[in-house]
Image (cartoon, rainbow, N blue to C red; front, side):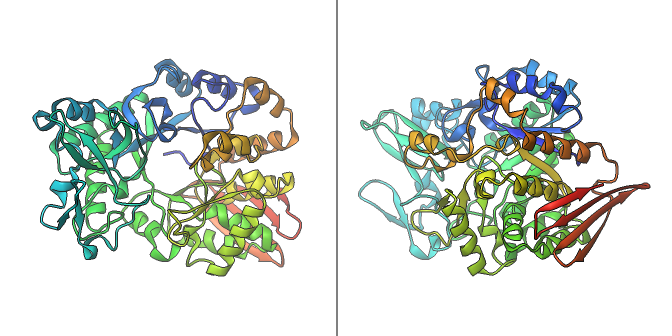
Length: 491
């Protein structure tokens, strides 16, 4: 798998359709800048959560086409696509069959019937769902208030609870639903779905498949419903067997604190992982005018041969839970304060901020909308170990979008960093110095042969200056970064 820079966007992020992004990638300014393109899942048929509630994995022709994917391939750019193991939309053919046929549906066990799952492990409520015994759910991680269920109306009028970890919407009369319904990985039909989907993604040209929310999929009464063991690793290994047939590299997505060492466990099992530590560490280093933490993290990644995809911003927030154990908790709280004062929103789960939090903000705004700091951060990213992933809005120095948050309503905090740009806005942005210089850095990273997962890294610290030196087959690349001034040299 290539280690060069990867562009990251929704199919409608630049101009409204995937073909518009293809046109941007064909512009001379983008020549030799990217080796990969991560297209977010609204390229599929979906309804909620900006693509992550998948109806089916066919291409949504309103967003893009197979020709667009071929055009990307012809540019020498490979694809990274999403596969959501934990759930499918209520509007999927499988769930609609349940709603239509009830107990007669061949898919009635394709999703998790809450009462069947918890039978014998709790008491039935007046509303018709089992309330599990407290000791069996005390370690479970629920992402919304109450139990994670959606009451589904069967043809005979009964309401049956199905497991629903993530989003849901129900019409007032209860006649229709939207939601992301959890799959029953013990069902043979689910495994047929997994095989068909990976086959389909390979057919689209996917070289990397991001496994979204996969750690929620394995469930057992009395165990955690996130990252339980050994269920999580058993699932991952079975998926890898299928993916290997298509030469697909899996990228499991897991948020966990540094102290839990999940990133290292993944590496030891032969997987790539996301460097969710880097976005916060770069801001921390810049704010403290000291790159020591970055040097320490780079040395760990390099010495332990941990292969990552790294990033600054992304479609989600700036991770902070992940930093626990690497920098002190009070320093994390200071980071939160800095980013929220700069307009970011703290994400927390029904008031339990310390359980899981990130700051939703455009990375440029998180840096105080300081162009030199943005360029400095980009230079640091491309010299850190890993495959650099570049969020489109960061590349164009996009700012916090408060109007989008307001328009999205409750729970719309993520829209702060998802502004769709018009063709005209892209054209104007390409004239800006900050955009040109970022593209120049990415072109350097993409074309310089000194980088690679098998290259040698040396790090030297002199007062406020950190020097990163990559070398491979006689080629060298050096970054001299001054954290006191945010000035840097690349040579």
